[in-house]
Image (cartoon, rainbow, N blue to C red):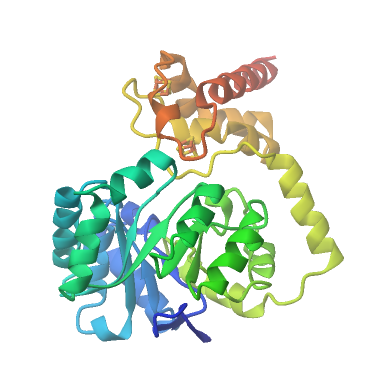
Length: 342
Ligand code: SF4
Ligand code: SF4
């Protein structure tokens, strides 16, 4: 594993980080063993969030006695100072530490988010206060919205920026990367596999390795996936013409509007299993109709409960027309079901 300077923070971190969402699916003992395997493989940068259920707690347990050997980033979705201050205290407790290396304002996607966090009594106040008190070393920000991310970089207020970055969503390699590097900021790539839509780690990493100043933070939910990710990351250096052609095929297959499985839209008040149902078109393109129908049955049947309330669309950071996409996927599922019946 190589270690790189993280912007102008003076922190040196592994060139490959670890994203803290998938460990929420694991029991504590398994999550701890996955995190410790990542550490043993040389990963020293760990990103989590107050919003990722017990992810912080699992990291706290995994790195007991090794706190000074890892760099921990966490974040809050809260927009006001009082609630953000509570989240910081909670993160410190869960992570079993008295300092957080990087504290990020989470998912600043729209002007209204920015106005809220920077207003008097906004979340930024609490994070700056925590930094002044030594509870937070550096302040960062995350956004799924690229123009907003560029705007955030240009405020000059942050040590790092975290955005989605992979060979499908690669626009951050241009203005955002140039501007952030000019400001000596650390850049973190969330969703290096486009939320699981890229099922080929080799080409995902071949693309990412072309940008050594951007640190990817893939999430892993098993020791085997840690081993796989680390070994691919080390070995995937040369991008061939065939790789570029394959990347193009993925881009065409997924189009611009696809679900990244971030689950911000959940829960649906009517019980629609939004995330797996949104993936039906992709799933069906990768298996036979019979297997796709069987595999996705529960999720697709739940789509019928949708009352088109629009709540999920308001929550989706990618502004996906979820209702329309669910309907289209359901139509496809019905066609496949008929095909299988006959
Ligand atoms: S629009 Fe449908 S899927 Fe979305 S939250 Fe409302 S009921 Fe659930
Ligand atoms: S529909 Fe949007 S919010 Fe929901 S999981 Fe997909 S990308 Fe995330």
